[in-house]
Amino acid sequence: MSENGTFPRMTGTEFIPEWFENVSVNRSAAERRAASLPGRRTVKKDHQAAWLARAITCIDLTTLAGDDTAGRVQRLCAKARHPLRPDLLAALGLDALTVGAVCVYPTMVPHAVKALEGSGIPVASVATGFPAGLTPLPLRLAEIRYAVDQGATEIDIVITREQALTGNWAALYDEIRQMREACGDAHMKAILATGDLKTLTNVYKASMVAMQAGADFIKTSTGKEEVNATLPVSLTMVRALRDFGDRTGQWVGFKPAGGLKTAKDAMNWLILMKEEMGSRWCMPDLFRIGASSLLGDIERQLEHHVTGRYSAANRHALA
Ligand SMILES: O=C[C@H](O)COP(=O)(O)O
Image (cartoon, rainbow, N blue to C red; front, top):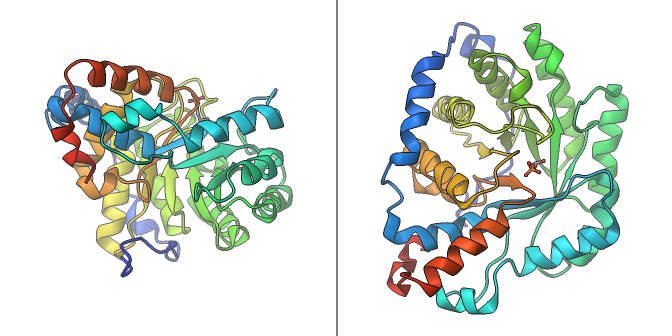
């Protein structure tokens, strides 16, 4: 970690199949552990309002729809700057709060950059033929460069699922490595589209390959697969990133995305991160939640806490 407490951009490693080729993930053990998470008291009920405020700071507030317009992106960015009503913010004892980033399609990046000027909120762009990733590699690399040129400082790439499904890990590594280079100084999040990968073993291996290739974050899903973020898949990815960090000292971030809509979802994923990785992994430089419609429910729950039983003394969970 650097002196100011932030993590540098990842460099990855060479391709090292020995780190994953003999791994076999036990699905029922992962499912049992994942099923126990929602009932855990790691994030205490009394402190939930503060944890929900924390969750907001970790949201990649997203719009990825065919009918996106400059106007919609501007409204999203206004929400990103002020995700909570002033009275809720005051009741939480906070002066200001913003989301982690805004995530849009490449052609929407200039609108987001303009709307977020001076806010410090990063603009993330999906790229590489999102969501399927089946355009030719030179076009996918050019799309990354386009988004970076337009001002995106975070790029969410998608992997070629075929390479994972056929066990062509060296090809997957090479492709992601080229994407890493095309990103330049922008942070790269590698979307594994885990709903397409069939097994948790493939999820573990794809996670490890993406990190070896230099991903700054590994991300579960595009939001467009039939199955998106789940707790067993997330547990598998988080354990892969822990193994990678133990081996290399490079601590990669995690981004669950797709279908996360409720405050309870946000709490479950924060519990997962806190239990598996510790509180440091509940901060936006190492944890993001990709979501288009989560914020509304968090606001509703916070309103309930604030007007009901929330006590300002609980805000230490934000410290
Ligand atoms: O990366 C973010 C996802 O596309 C968001 O998915 P969602 O619309 O299901 O929240």
